[in-house]
Length: 155
Image (cartoon, rainbow, N blue to C red; front, side):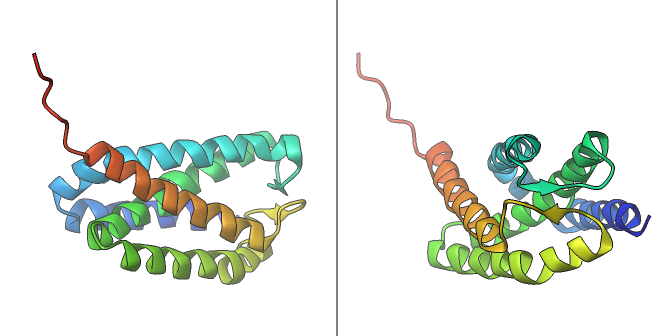
């Protein structure tokens, strides 16, 4: 029960902050990269039962709810804010993401396990850190690629 309350409350509060404070141009600019990485995380989540990386109490239905609540809640909104404040400053972006990924892997993961979000099986906290940091770097590259100026075609 506490886990469900946390999931829903977290998503509502974080989206309210985005809607109220994030400039619309930043939302539009960084929406594609956030959707891209959200899709990658959803794929990882769907692979989890196959490889027994982690277990969500309640089976597949709760696993999907948990994944969507996390991906569309804190992950999505925080990703937008990080890009808003750090894009164009790669060392800052990389440092902020490393700090956030360390906090998630080593401080929040044990908390989430304790309150019943999930339980790690064949995936380690270090694995989470590496996966999320890799996705952050991939995100930055994706954003650079989609913002790359298009060369005019010659006739």
